[in-house]
Amino acid sequence: MKRLIITFAILCLVVIAGVGAFVWSGVYNIGADDHHTKPVYALMQALRERSIEHHAKDIVVPNLEDPQLILKGAGQYAAMCTGCHLAPGMAENEMRPGLYPKPPQLSKFRPDQREAFWVIKHGIKMSAMPAWGSSHDDATIWSMVAFLQKLPDMTPAQYKDIVAKAPPDEDMDMDMSGHDHDAAEHAHEQ
Image (cartoon, rainbow, N blue to C red; front, side, top):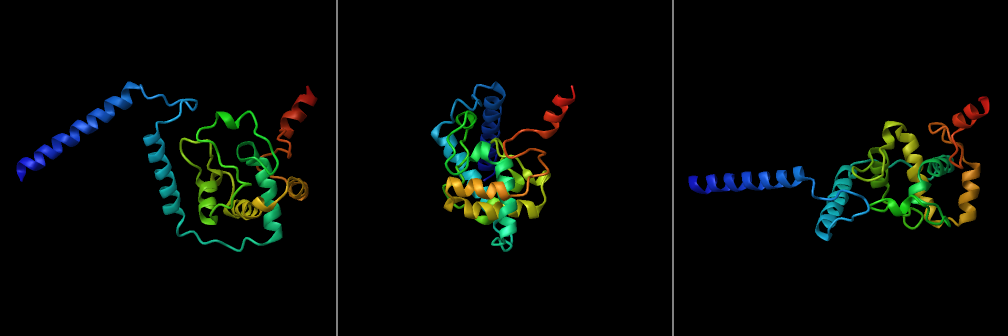
């Protein structure tokens, strides 16, 4: 039994040393334009999905049917999300093809409410998904989740209409076209 434990410990050390040497070598291309191998991609997808499911399982979902909450979420989505996740009727943009993994088009499905809240709040490592919880409170994040539940049923015209009525995202200091107000004012001053 003692010999088995020693053999197992040596095997573990060899594996750890091998993984460490591989990582340290830098031979694995981490560039977003060189996609992962199928096994690595499958492993990362499983890790992402299980992690989100695990961390989101106990989140209590508030009432997301409040029209004002949905309206606020529309403004947040327009200001912060359309560049990566697009909007109804929006064509691919020049940024999305360079993102890996490619962000989901949120107008094409209804994400689980708990999982959507967790992802928006905490982001996803090694992807372009930021952790909006560092700059937005839970109520604002829930407004985005409420909006995401309505988004798949919207036509491009309905989307434009609700965004036009939505309060702006003051945290971003941008209008719906993505222009920075301070930069424009600063340019006029010079």
